[in-house]
Image (cartoon, rainbow, N blue to C red; front, side):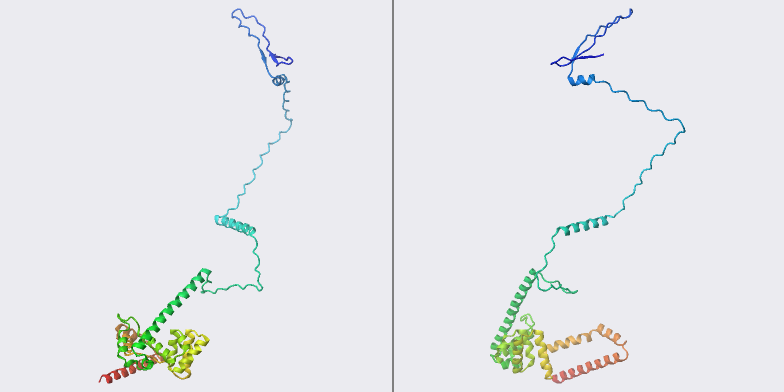
Length: 343
């Protein structure tokens, strides 16, 4: 038994009991008696050591006698319900839908347009180009400006060349340049050099340059002189000075386009029962005969025509035969004219 002795104003000390010596048996020597030592502990530790022991736990109650109750089976575990499977695409679509809803909710509502009338929706038909942006409109305007400058330079150069030809080849005589060009040897030599390595200018351009220069001088009309080369060329088939002057004033007053000017000239000629004058040089006539005769001299083309035309029946066969007879008659007339002129 351990006895705890406390002293006032000092730390508690524990006095260990000294066992009483017991006589050792005769055969064996007694062990030495242990010395009693004093142990000093804190007050809290001493209180804990002197605290009474808790009462022992009551024994378990015996089971009641009688019929033995069957053991109840353990409760069945709750069934595990698998979550519905979703494909990766459905998951991504759902996430995208939620993101779009969140963005739409966060963005402020657009302010209504302050217009007096409701804006009309622009309808773009299939096959039409989309409307131009501001940058594309700027580039279009620049392209139009440069194109007009190029046209002015080209037409100005052609008009200047025609004036030079009128003064130096036809001695500044507009009547000679319009009606008697064929009798001018220099003009004939110039036409022979056209479309060649020495003069890469077409015959049409030469005729147009001289005619415009001659009519500018003959008509002496500001309306005709102010027109561009394209519309001047379209007025030349009228042939008469007064008609050309009146047509130039009409075209200039209402600012007709090139296509409208051509339709106007055709209508004027149709009212008078005239057809546009067909201009052709001997060399041009020879070139056309060569192009027309080329299919007839090709054996492969003739064989194909023969096999296809032989399958025609009825009216189409007769129409094809009549057209071939007309071609044969025209060729015979041309051959007779050439033979007569050469003989």
